Length: 365
Image (cartoon, rainbow, N blue to C red; front, side, top):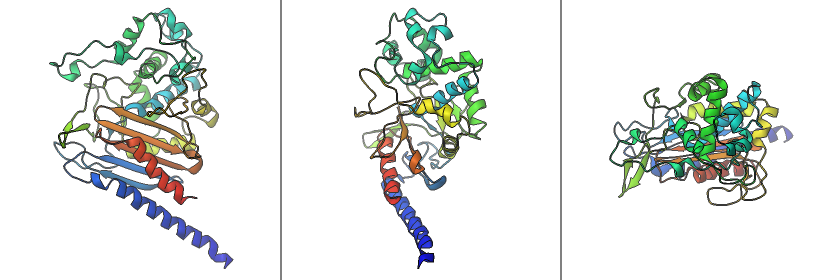
């Protein structure tokens, strides 16, 4: 009987994984229409693909089906790549987490002297939100003509006399901070931000279709377009005045490429475990600590939320922009990753990813 224990355990685990896959598939069953946008879903367990499927179409014009190679705008899931770029420059000895904004940009106002790179990474810089500083856009113009670029964000911040609070004293999610981090990468490396990501992250990891998209400079292969549900149907809503910035949300990627990114995180391919440690250390502040989108208490490192979920160690992030909802939920101790990419705004990718993760976490008990 003893000799049968291990084969029986393997059989049971395989059955559990099959059951979990069916449960995940059932969650997304309502998105199988060939006439509506949808989602791409990936589950990695124990270093292997446990579930992968596309639902719906990439756009409403050609109605190409979504698959593992479809590229979605990641929105704020981009921030982990921006943080990694900064960490690679620290690895190279070209940058320190304690360098201030005025060290890097000598023309920045005096209030930037107290803001260091670490503050930008963990959202404690106090930089004003660039969305609040932008002048109203002319609705009669094509959206591409009114989009703000990274350099323009920096100029808006330079015209301010003070930040929102003393750097390091509180936590406030800051797209401005990550736009500036993208510009820090450019200034310190001497390369455009997208080129640095390409050369130091995407090419080494063979993420061949992942790009920091810049209209007129490059193209997104197998591109999904964003949509919003209106009057019972879906309308393409792919770009907004804030869709052209890079460091806070400009990367497009797919399940097949994010699978490689997950492997690099798991195996410490780009950055060693000690080098990753600062990114996975929750920031401590005296007031207004990190919160989840719904206001629940959270934790944050460099480009990652770090609060556990139901007792499971977790690193995660979500992205929301016009027409897209994205999420990555990683449970390192459980060797589990769930990625959900949606090209429609009426889905909650974060909650869908957590629900899918729950099926696999329950089966591994």
